Every structure is written in structure tokens, then in C-alpha cells.
Length: 103
Image (tube, rainbow, N blue to C red):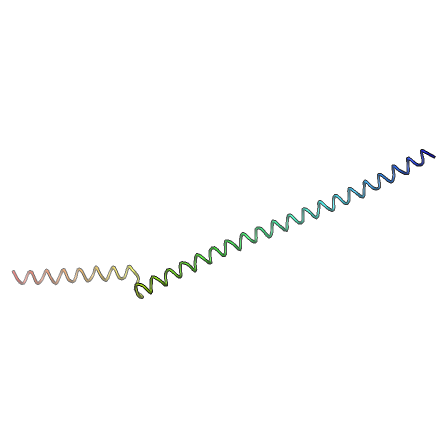
């Protein structure tokens, strides 16, 4: 009778152990899936942050360009410099010719 009781207890323990192992496997599987989803969302979040940074940088550059254009008019700074240099050469040439005529 004791042997039968021990055998039944052993089978009960083995079955419970199998159930526990399956439960642990399922728990591990779910934890792994959760970590994969978290990693996916972290990666997506990083991509969105980079996109926001790029968009912000583009917007800032556009604002700076607009402000520069408003300050200096429609001409670019290089065009303004070219015009000033050209005007200076013209003035120098005219003054040079005036001085030449006076001598």
C-alpha cells in the first residue's frame, strides 16, 4: 500500500513538474516577446527623434535664411559684396580719370 502511495505521489510530482516547466517556458516566451516589442518601439522612437531633429534643423535654417533675406533684402550677401566692390572700382576709376585730367 505504501509502495502504491509513493508511486502515485511520484507520478503526481512528475506531472506537476511538467506543468511547472511548461508554465516557465510560456512565461519565458512571453517575456522574450515583450522585450522584442520594447526594442522595436525604442528603435522607432529613436528614428522619430532623429527625424524631429532634422526637421527642426531645417526649420531653423529656413528661419535664419528668411531673417537674413529680410535684413539684407533679396540680394544675397555675396551679391551685395560684389556690388560694393564694383562700385568702389568705378569710383576709383572716375577719381583716377579726374586726377589725370587735372594734371
